[in-house]
Length: 228
Image 1: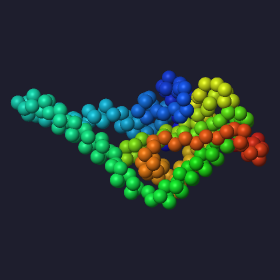
Image 2 (image 1 turned 45 degrees about the vertical axis):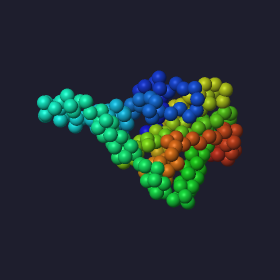
Image 3 (image 1 turned 180 degrees about the vertical axis):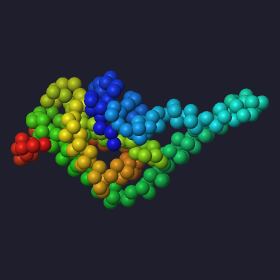
Image 4 (image 1 turned 90 degrees about the horizontal axis):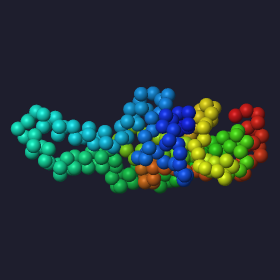
């Protein structure tokens, strides 16, 4: 999981958007500042062009080895397209039938309810801690649809802007708020891997939870005053 904030994003232009939810996968390149090499490698693997070049690398290798047949190898677009389809749609992604077997209906509904419950709790604590009384906050969880690799999850807290009347923005979360999300959002049984199954079953890579700031109870606001 990578929490996107202005502090953790190098590409600041990607933080500008007009409509909630702001999506990143397939739309903007995210280079996680301060993340480990595993996260950075996973982000690089998400780049389609690099995956295509890797899948087609054997054709280049064969052309170098069998130079007399290089022209024939280069003129085999149908075979290349078949290889790309096999890698992208059959290996890295699951068929609709395979997706349907990942979770039964009861487990799917339970995990979806747990995600919404945790998201509302996080937004409540963040909004109360910031003493927000107007507008709404959105917890946006975005996941890659690639199934046979480690999950790639981007989490943002998005706002309608300035008490609901401004320009949408991604909240610059504090270290304490980021830690709260890390400790809470994907605690068992809703792990990041379980969330990936939920994403694939629901065929929706983005989950959005909205909370109106005026709906935060008074006791949660009082609790925020005694320490986040």
